[in-house]
Image (cartoon, rainbow, N blue to C red; front, side, top):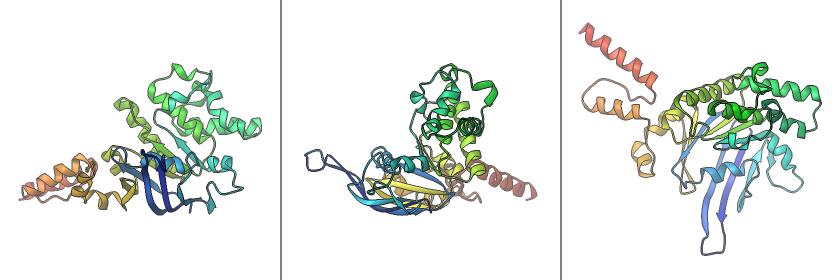
Length: 286
């Protein structure tokens, strides 16, 4: 099991008039290879939570284990923890700084003290994993690339560290529709090909419904739901009460059901398409 959380609590500015509990006694486990969506309204505790997973923040109380090793415990190497847990922040392209794509992606592996041969292989593999052509892009300045390509290069820099867990915080933020679709497709393919644990933080209920196996819903620092997308999005009333909602297609199929149409409640466009085609074929036979 890559991740185990035990009674995690984080309090900002403890003991002051500005004291705020961002994470409130959270406990759960994630298994190897899961694709997990993390959703919640602004201020729900999502960002604070993910920053604990590779030791950027320390718990006020509670424990975090990565492969049975307690993060932040005495004698534990945070360098090794961060090798296992790759964190891609919002707008990661703002962290690009080298003069070529190759040098940017190679920065992390080089700091591990790897051989030149190993660094070269990791860089090539990582660039290709995010759907870019190594030979045609490696010597280009990252600042000459499109927004979506920059985003993919930044993700490649994290993948070159070969993490066991990949955390993506709003990876499509600010991208145009084409760039957004490309990034999501690459994330899905990456999970499928490498089998690593992926945690996707997103405000898009559609993306969560289409991509993940499990959804964690946070509100006011607590985990409200942790279940499959289908089961979570059945709880529309609760989700709306905490400032979220369901995918738009769910509302559409609910409305059709309320009008007497014999259609299942759907959480993705693909599901709805199949249901509507089935419904139309049934009408023709009548």
